[in-house]
Image (cartoon, rainbow, N blue to C red):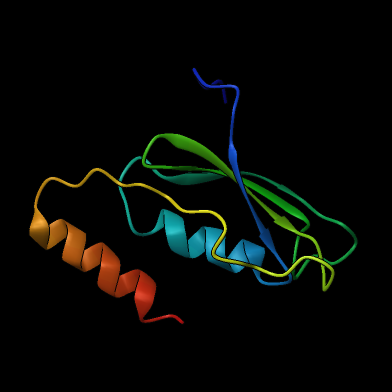
Length: 95
């Protein structure tokens, strides 16, 4: 898949990166998983490349040396407060 941008936001996970990417792409239109690169552990692939609302993203499952932190964020332009509330509720209930 060709993107206008050569930059992807990359999120570092200790584990569960593929599950997170799958969850994210179910939340917004024009979202999909593009590629999965395994590291010998098919239940938790090392790299997942995906598009989130048209923006290229990546998750790297890096193991216990690199835990998920609040150091990255996604800015989403929503149509109205209802859409903002729906996304906020979906993302924060999984903590």
